[in-house]
Image 1 (cartoon, rainbow, N blue to C red):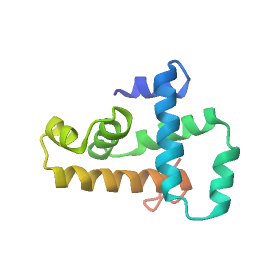
Image 2 (cartoon, rainbow, N blue to C red):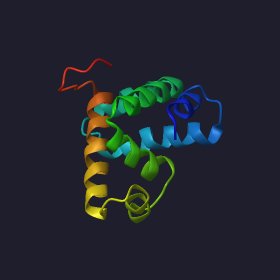
Image 3 (cartoon, rainbow, N blue to C red):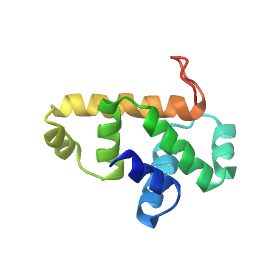
Length: 118
């Protein structure tokens, strides 16, 4: 998925892309929430703002992590399919997904360890 497609999803141009972006943020992100106030905060933020934040977070990822996140979570490919598509091992694919999600979580929670700007 291209950056322009992500921007279209952020602008709500297609329901499918918008639902996928919301799903990624609400489901995958909710799995990692550890404190109640974070969950309450995300429940109160309008979906458009979440979508825009998610697009920015995805754009901030290095290409190798963005690719696996988009293929796995947005295109809903299996780990094996993602690994085959990118010509990497399943283990490398799993590692990139884990690291990419961790970077997304840090960005969305405001913990930018490398001094990156939001």
